[in-house]
Image (spheres, rainbow, N blue to C red):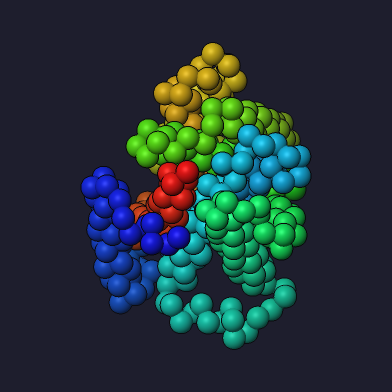
Length: 383
C-alpha cells in the first residue's frame, strides 16, 4: 500500500515540498544548536525547560487522544467511528514522533540520548516515558496499518490486532499520566505540585486531539473527497466539547484553590501568568488569549446550531487547539520556573533558532501524517 503515497496531485506534492523545506531549515538550525549547545536557545539556569518541552507535553496529549475514537469503536461498537479510527491511530503516530524529537533536541547533545539506554533506571520517569512512548508508537502504527491492509483486501480485521487494541487503550492513558508525573513529582516546583495535574492533562488532551482530528477530517473531505462521515465528525465534536467543559472546570478548581488559600508559593506563579509579577508580564497576553479562545470554542461547540455547521466547527476546533496549545505549552511549563524557589524572576523568550527547530519538528510530524493519510485516501478511493 505504501506505493500510494508516491502518487498524487500537484497540491499534495507542493504540500510535501513545503514541509521538506521547513524540515531543512529546522535541521540547519539544529546543527547550529549542536555546534554551540543550548546557549542558542532562550533557556537559562533558572528556566531550563521552554518551547521544546512545552510542545513535547502538548503532543503527548494529542497522541493519547486517539483513544477517544478507538475506545468507542472497539469497546462500544460505535460503527460511525469506523472511518475515523485509522485516522486517529495515524495521527497518534505523527504526534508521538514529534514528542520524541522534542525530547531529543531538548537534551542538547545527541549522545546524551544514549544515557537513557546505557544506564536505564526504573526510578527515572524519563526512562518510563521512553518505554511508553515508543510502545505506543509501535502499537498505533501496527494496528492502524493492519486495519487498513484488511480494508484494502476487503477482508475482516486480523484477529491478532484486537488484543493489541485493548492494550493500546490503557496505554494511551498511561503515556500522558507518566508525562504529568514528570512535573508533579518535582516537589520544589509548587506550580506543578497538584494531584489535579494528570487529570487536567488528560481532559485537555481529549479536547485538543479530537479538535485536530476534526480539522484534518474536514480538510481531507474538502481536498481529497475522503469523507469520514458527518455523524462521526459530530460525535467526535461532542467528545471534544465534554472534554473542554471538564478542562474549564479543572482550571476553575485550580484557580479557586490557589487564590482562596493564598499560599504565596502557589499564588505567585498564577499571578505571573494572569497579571504579571514585579513588572514582568510577557506571558499575560498569551494567557488571556488562551482563556478567550477556550471560552469562544466552548460556546460554539456547545451550541448544536453552530457545531453542526462545518465552517464554524472548523473555526471552533482551531480555537480550542490553539487555546490548549498555549495553556498546556508555554502557560504550563514556563511559569513552573518563574519565580524561582529563591524568588528570582527570569524572563524566557524563545530565540529564532529554537523557533525554527520547533517548526522543523512540527513539519516532520505532519510529513509522516500526510504520507500515512495519503495511503488511506488511496486505499479508500479504490472502492
